[in-house]
Image 1 (cartoon, one colour):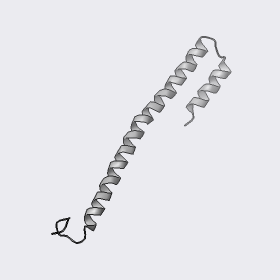
Image 2 (image 1 turned 90 degrees about the vertical axis):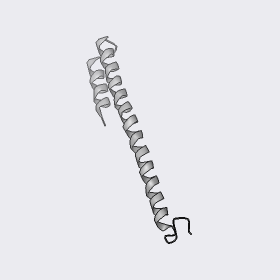
Image 3 (image 1 turned 180 degrees about the vertical axis):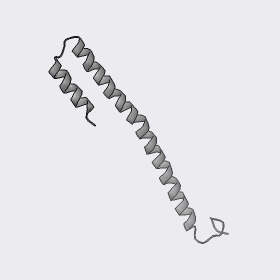
Image 4 (image 1 turned 135 degrees about the horizontal axis):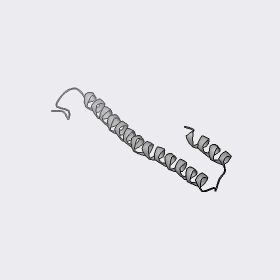
Length: 75
């Protein structure tokens, strides 16, 4: 009896394992992007909030604030 239940040389099993690992790696990449994509947008919001506070406190003028806001909105 062969390793894969006696069906040929195991090509189907090898293809199945390859597909299995492609799905697992794809899922991990997707989860990584979901987690860090949200963290990235949260840090942009945080940076904008910091710029708003600096503008409100008079640390930066309106031109600097608008430039920061424009730069942070790029993506």
